[in-house]
Length: 457
Image (cartoon, rainbow, N blue to C red):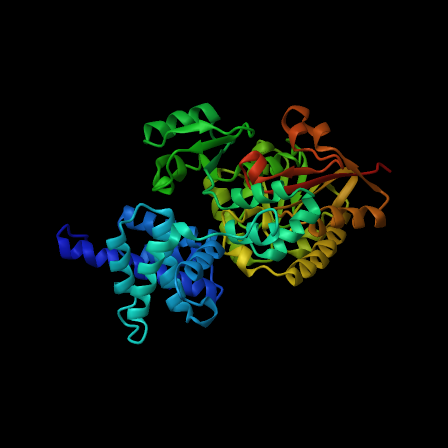
């Protein structure tokens, strides 16, 4: 149905927009569904304008990023008690509080939204209106815990991260100011990075092509294959995308792929290929010469990888099942393990993840990661490379997994990323010889990488 421009239609779509935000929040926090998938499905089925889509996206991700701060403001600017509220009511209050604190929405508009969203809540509609009015009046007078006296509580509430994560990061990073900077960075909107497809074009030609399609960009700070786009709406409808000239890929993800050192003529195995973003880049680095073996247990993702490879012109990618993977035992120049992890390095893209994650999840993931690296290391040939990577900031999943593996396998030894490409990786190499990127330091997703060489026979 086309959007009409009369006043009543605008009101209808405004209410529909906020009702959609409420639905996605409830589904994310109760049913543990993923907001990006929910929004993608709704945007395909429902008739939303570009501005409505932008508003829905801003509110959902903004609320998930700042949820602890919003809840604290709700309790300290009104008489509401969070623990006693139905989730639907609480999410209505979160929507209105986010508008009041983080947007330029007028008080009258916020109160109207509160009334509209709670219209079917007979017992609580008056409560919602009164609470929102109190929040608007008192929000600027709310005092957060003292940073010096209660640093964990201050960072957790002010920058909206679970206390256990704040405590964990302090143990691992060692500096409370670094932890605060990391949590603050996680609540920023990440830039949209794309990666040129070197099989079809160059960075200069792609930038010119996108500019002609009204998508201006600037070169990425670190990756020689990356561009930062100034806008994202409609980017997948561009002619450049349909022709396979680029893929959306964060700069940290691009760098961790470059860490493989994939070169033309090699056999490179991507053991956890997923939807194939890094696999496609490996193929591009190899200039379609040699073989990229892609293994993934999820058949739907493997199907996506094949479709993307066809669009990209990546003809040297071969997808295999576990039996086919075993045929390459001891033959790979490079085995790349992009291990399943807690995703603590991509909280700014997936803010819902920080509210889902538990310490138990990390323990279970560590056991799985150790099993994976043990299983796939046998694919590496004599003198070949084993590259272990995650998108997490968690010592148990990173340094400890690699350390445990090296203790059990003395035929492997570490190779510093700085030796792979000094100009590119020197600033990302830790004292222990690992790759690490951080949102607060590099303005990119948090990645970890380790390059291990198998001794020659």
